[in-house]
Length: 102
Image (cartoon, rainbow, N blue to C red; front, side, top):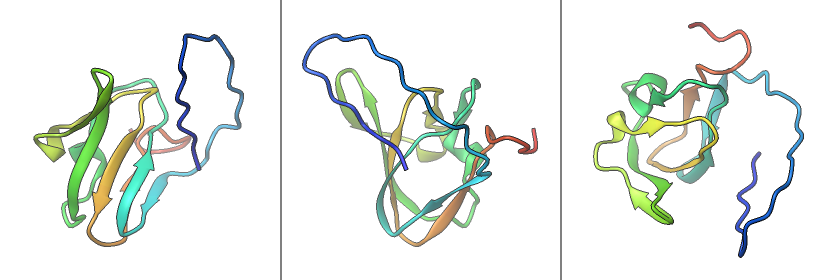
């Protein structure tokens, strides 16, 4: 689960949460909103299996959602979330999860 917070003006607040032990992210058919934990930038190609069929991916950039030109090269950055359109149920590996292989 996750949250997308839209603000009309700058505000400072803290978010407290429990770290996820999940080593993967389940994608349902259609649009999925997700973020990866961690402090390292990864590409979508590093976390997606070759057989996973993603039709489109979007990132919030420049004040709006923008379609990623090259899916496998989309840079997933810490603190950002992404929309992906899965053509079939799939699982993304989470390289930032506790205990995940480096």
